[in-house]
Length: 173
Length: 104
Image 1 (cartoon, rainbow over the protein chains, first blue to last red):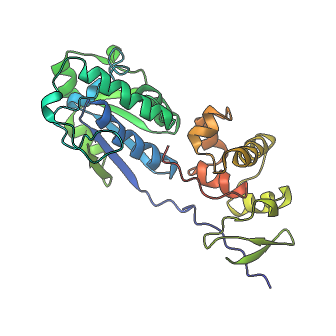
Image 2 (image 1 turned 120 degrees about the horizontal axis):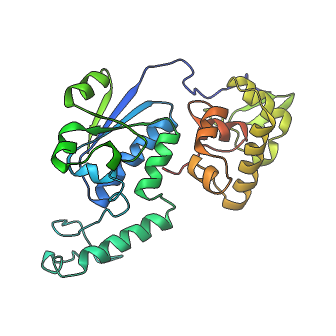
């Protein structure tokens, strides 16, 4: 005996769901949450906007986006690999620690086939995502549109952003 | 697991409707699955589907959109054109594979 067809619900009716993700951090580890969730949202057919502000600007400044770094200083969740032992905060500020930690994190991401920050943004745009830059951050960093990735759609004010994201689910990272 | 009839063949699916037995899949079944999600299969769709089937055999898990781009050579943008809105899930569904588990 066979039962009638079961068809997955791929949400063919347009729910109008929309997401806005504010990326405010320029540390390598904190660049990824917004990228991963934004990419996942696009893969679910959700209109997605990424808004870069403050330190998050380093993710879209062409001369910096390849060089985000990870510092274990101040991060009490750092453990000796494969153990629960904490790495003492006292060793974090030693010279070379940031570059070593950055190198290790990049390798871990690479092993999991997670793209680099610029590649990830390219994928997000290819999937239909929208990138926006914050006006105040642009003024503070003294950068103009030519300094930013070409796929950033514009430098917009906070109120433009609020207007544009009406009804959206918001994530601040 | 329910058994349903697709293209006059009994097919085992999970509660969502994704096929669960790799060898029960056929091109005739794929055509019905595609029609159910309103996709008309072109030669390019078939290229993607055959890549996914082969890749699953090798990797033991369904390809994500990223993997389908980097390994299969099908650009993300094109995946969205061929399988609108939810490419990774729709591709797996039509190829008779489980939903991809990977986050990226």
